[in-house]
Image (cartoon, rainbow, N blue to C red; front, side, top):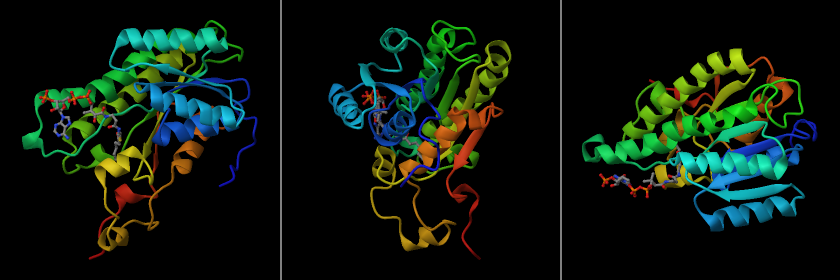
Length: 268
Ligand code: HXC
């Protein structure tokens, strides 16, 4: 689908996207690139990074991939530095890396719980921690007058409760708290805007194939207000809005992009 935004809304910006090689992260990488940004992707799998970067290059997007695990502070530091060295600035950090699996709480080990918090929550904070120096107003290489932008990809699971997702619900609740607290502190001190996006079920993503491997059944469709899954494109458009000047007064919010699904209930 054609983007409703002008092609230059992120012109000259440099975006680092964790988990940017696949799924929602890759769509954000692509759309940010199509709207003028240079793209650095961080991920654990070299093969995924390589094919994502060549796909971006084939669209004429300046892009580079850096191997790293958001659970390791030294990787986070290294990738942030390499991004700065490669492109000369860092304007936008998108935390899209996540871990997930379905498991009943009684079958989940504390280490399994911790692993997902390590990736989603601690990983998000670690990336923010390492990027702060570059994103702050008047940070090294910053060309625009203001500070940079952080976008944290969250979920809606924890607004209520979700079967077999205790670890991810806890992790995303922490991500949302991190979004709000950094928005307060770093918005005030460094002019960095920090926002989140909470996608609903998005088709053709690793998340959907892990969490809902079958078709959404007709009973479920009955209470999905828009009667369909979202598209990765929907999340990327929300990300563009928040990362561009269109969102310049938005700080500390997590935008739900789910067609209203989390509010819906079966008809009685
Ligand atoms: C129960 C499990 C498990 C499973 C792992 N564990 N998989 N427990 N059921 N299916 C437990 C292990 O037993 C172990 O605990 C601990 O978790 C760590 O497992 P490892 O395999 O060593 O971890 P690692 O290799 O680091 O892999 C991390 C991972 C994996 C999260 C488990 O799935 C991963 O790398 N995922 C990244 C990609 C991904 O998931 N993308 C989808 C994101 S979708 P013990 O006690 O045995 O040592 C998404 C959508 C969220 O995030 C929102 C939905 C609406």
